[in-house]
Amino acid sequence: MNLRARLRTTSAVWTAPIWIGIVAFYFFYALHLEDPYDEVISGPLWAAQQVAQSLFYFYAFAYAITCGLAVWEGGRLKRDGVWTLAPGRTRFRVAADALAPVVLAGWLILGLPVVMRLIETRLLPTPWALAPLLFGMGLVVAWAVMGCALGHVTPRLVSAPLSAVFVYYLITKTGQVEPVWLRHVSGSLDTSLAFGEQYKALTLLVPFLFTMSVAAAVAVWWLPAARAIQRGARGAAGIGALGVMILCANAASGWGYGDGPVSVGHAPVRCTGTAPRVCIAETGGSAEQLKRVRGEILRTVTRLREAGVNVAMPETVSDSLLNGRNRQHSTQTNWWLPLSEQAGKSGLGMTGVRYGVLLTSVRFPCAFPTSFESGQSADWVVNHDAAMLWTALLVEADKPYLAWRRGEYGSTFQNAGQVLAKVEQRARNARRLSQDKQADWFHAEQTKACSLVQGITR
Image (cartoon, rainbow, N blue to C red):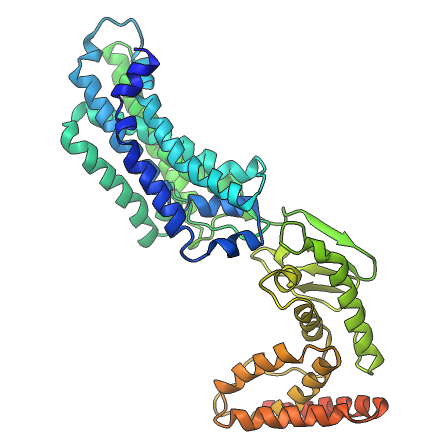
C-alpha cells in the first residue's frame, strides 16, 4: 500500500482533529493556567525543566490515544484477513506498516507541546533535556504494540474507545494511589525538575523497562515459528517480563512522592570579579545585571562595615537558583542569595539584592527563635527588630524588611501596630545620632535583645 492510500485509510488521520484539539487545549489553557505567558518567558528558564513541564499533561493522552488507535488498526488487520495471506512479508513488517501512522500520532501529541514551549521560551535544549520526550516516544511504541495485539482478540468497535479510556485512567490514577512505586513505573514521570536539574538515567529506565517488557512479551506472540518453539518463546517472554517488572518495582519502591533520582548543578553560570566572586544563572533572566549586582553587594557590605556593623566580605556569592532541591546554606565566606529572583523583572531589583545581603551578613551574638510561639515572651523583638531596621535604613532596604515583619506581627501580636511603631521609632531615632553613637546604639540593642531572649530560653 502506498503512502497516500495508507494515510487515507488510517484511523490516525481521521481522528487527528480530536487529538490535535486536545494538544491545543491543554497547551494554551491548562499549561498556562498557573503560569501566564509573561511569567513563563520572564524566567528563570531551564530547557530540561520546560520540557518536563510541557509533557506533564500529555503522557497519559499520548499513551491512551495511541493504544485506542492501535486497537482499531489491529482489528482492521484481523478483519481484512491479512494474517492468513501468503507470507510475502513478516507479521512484524505488516504490523509496523499499519502502526506507523498511529505511532506518529502519539509522537506528535508529545512533540508538539515541547516544540511550542521551546519556541515561546526561545530555549535551545541539550540532548539530555530532550530525554523525557524520547522516553515518552519509546513508550508510545510499546502501547501501540499492546493495542494492536488487543485489536486481534477483541471487537475493535468496542475495545478501541474503551482501551483508550482505560489506559488514560490507568496512567493518571496510579499517581494518586498507594504504593508510591506505582506512580514511578506508570510512564508519566512523577518527579518534577527544578532549575539546573535533569533526570538521572534510572528515573527514565525504570518506567521504560516496566512497560516495554510487557510490549516485548506481547510481540513474541507474532513470532513466526513452529508451535512448540512459539510456546517456549512465549513462556520465556512472559517470565522475563514479569522478572523485569518486579525488578523495576523494587527499584522504585525506595523513591518518595515526586522524588525520583535527579542530578543537579547543570545550569550554565556566569561569574565576575574576585572577593567576592559573584555568580548568577545564565538563563535565570538576570545575567545581564551581573556587574550591577556585584557592585550592589560590594556597596552594601562596605556601607555596613563603615557604620560599625561587624560583617565580613564573602569570598563567593552564588545565585540560589543554582542550588537545586538540596539547598546549601550560606556560610560566612560563601553566600547563596536569590540574585536572579530579585534582579529579575518580577523581583525588587537592587533593593532586593541589598535586602538579601542584609539578612545574610548581619549577625547577632546569640540565637533567636525562628518563629513566635504562643505563651512565650517576645520582649526581645523590639530591640532585635529595631537593630535590624537600623541596618536596613543604612542600605535602603527598609521597605522589604518592614513588609516582612508587618506580616509576622499581624499573625502573632494583638497590638501589632504598636509594636511596629515602637520598632520604627527606635530605629529612626538612632539614625539621628552621630555615626559613632549609632554604632554604639546598635551593639547595645544587640546585647539587650540577646539578654532578653536568653532569659526566655533558660
